[in-house]
Amino acid sequence: MSSTNETLSQPLETSEATVAAANAIPPQPIAAPISYTVGVIYCLLAAVGYTLANIALRQASDLDPILVTAAKAVPTMVGMAPGVFLLWNRGVVLAPQRSAIGYLIAGCLVGQFVGNCSFQYSLSIVGLALAVPITLGTMVIGGAIFGRIFLGERVTTRSVIAIVVLILATAILSLGSGRSAVRDDLTPLQIASGVIAVSISGLAFSFLGTMVRRSLLSGMAVATTMFVSGLIGTFGLSTIALMRVGPEGLAATTANQWLVMLAAGLFNLIAFFLLTVALQVVSVVVVNLLNVTQVAMAAIAGVLIFHERITQSMVIGVSLTIIGLMVLGKRKTPRTKPLVSESDEPT
Image (cartoon, rainbow, N blue to C red; front, side):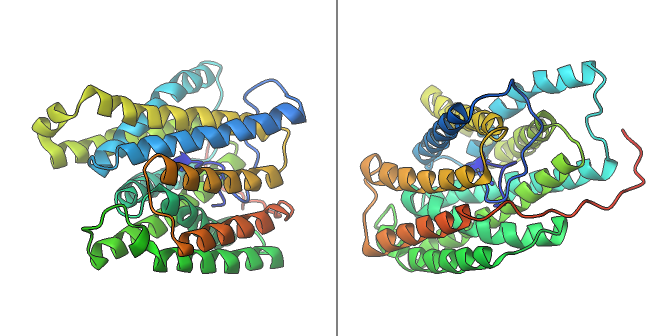
């Protein structure tokens, strides 16, 4: 999913897919204040952007998942580099706490290498209509766990109810994954690997989201967090991708395939920017309802564009995912305990 959602998730890829979160901490303002109505419109546009990114990733599901993830990270790195340079040029401390950059790097490594690669792999097995709801469900579950461990956030009764519903939804979607698989020649073991991969990707995205939020709480700029994520994804994964596919594989990749991969990264970057601006004026409730919109649009796109099969378990599982996210969307922003002051000197 779009690193989606990455900085916003308590789950949030996304992916770089993926990626908005249930328990987001509004990042530092990066644009002039906007009205609430404009903020809601930005959220809807962000949902469309994340869906377009996932559609592009689904289109590239026959390519090496590590190569796709590396290419998708390029727009984020390139797009955020000028912002980081301007901050540095103005004398802004990019990492107020040394430990914050360490936590961020750890989160980005997990998010890029585990989250994005696993999500991309799963698209070729379970398809878009199943991958997105399972990812969002496990992101919420993981976000509650990691938020409690690393940020000291409370897990409310409403959160527990939502998590139970999402676990049930994930189980139903997983049990019906065999009938919804994108190819008939897949073995039960391959289908199981796709379900496990997409579940792991959600947990990885939630860990990334928690680490990014911890960095934001320490005073790190949003542009810095995104640039680090894009940098790690671009160079770290490119090296592995080159070893996997070799120069011949890169040469065999068509111009259209490169454009699709870069488009996924560009849509993800635009969606994240819109959502970041919107969070200055909208509540977390709107962010959670955004997740509902993504689930619905992913299911529609999977069926209409990629002709993924509609099954009873898919309908029930997607419906339960939407219900769980709506329950979560009614909760108040959780209290976050202040981080323990650290003796790190500013870098």
